[in-house]
Length: 480
Image 1 (cartoon, rainbow, N blue to C red):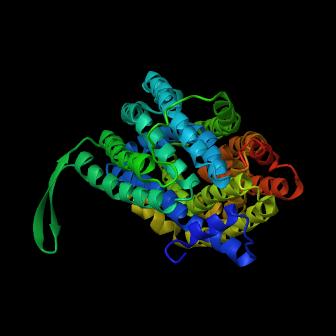
Image 2 (image 1 turned 135 degrees about the vertical axis):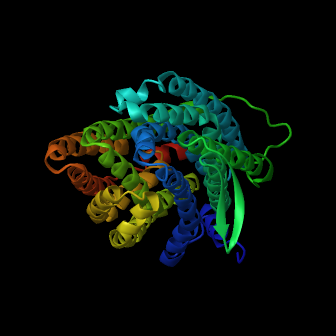
Image 3 (image 1 turned 60 degrees about the vertical axis):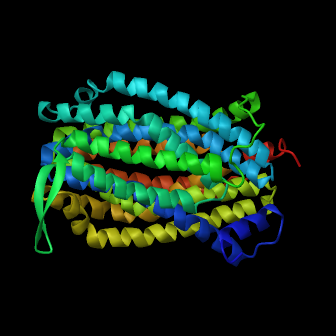
């Protein structure tokens, strides 16, 4: 108990022990903190890439910003695919069926690898024409093509990294994936220093040091991130397959595909994948709206999105922890706690992101200055970040509630809510405001839409009595 309070509390939840309100909140916090660090570390990697590439000039920054929404689409699809299996792992662990959890892990990893190669082929096929489709100018299309090409080639590595991390988290081990993601940030920075810039000398503490470099520019940023992902993927797979107490490989347990497991994974993953496609498609359309506003707006938009990510990543961390917690609660048959834990987690996420939003408003100039030395980009980026700060608490409501619903296997309705808010509110409003207010108009539309989305998710969480129905149905199929 003293060594790992979250493991002790999760064990109590699975065993049917009574958990006080204090214990419930403590469990959410214990699981959320490592997940928050893991999410923040992924954004720090983007920060590192953007900051280093930003030193190469506005065109280099704009080339990455142009394809950013497309890379989010690919990354979102890989994450969505993993959800179908990781949620089932949480249900099985909650029910005490470790053998069934391992069976799902094996199926999930093999099919995820195949899925990632399909995405790789699609990405490579469209990589050359994509920057042109997105409205990029000739001066940035070449670098944008190379960045997206390397990103696509590295998709299997990303897929297996995310899959292993999600399954470790579903077993209740939130700490290890967090540590490895933080390590990935340091590796990314190290690889980028060598690959982006040419060889050079720097002064440090009065001494001149030689720093080796390849000078690949934007291409180097993509390669650096891919190499960091590769190293951490190997570590993740090792800890999942050989060190995880519940999920490591056992002799005599072979890979077999079970129709019910695959069908359940598809039922969970497809709505999430469609949601990611819809959301990223909306981001691509948003990029099309921003592109005619000029290079400064494209770069400021890209940098501001990266900067804002530091603010909302805590929400995604809490949402990830909520998926594990709700999944194990349903697996254990603890329906008395499911909805209460969902509300506590959502309220906690809103409080955390209200604080992070206030901080973002205050330090917005510094956040942008880290990413770009261009004064015009800094001023515009600061202005749009301060607009977005007001939406952060309601954005948290949608993020964390979505994690709660995923833990219950309820993914269809949340996907529909995201579709309606993005395509019926944000994009039309952005298209109307952009010609009148420039990039500020696009971010005003975003702020309004996120507030509406948060309200919709809170209504779903509070009014609907059936969002955990899918989890209860699945629980009935598990062994006693």
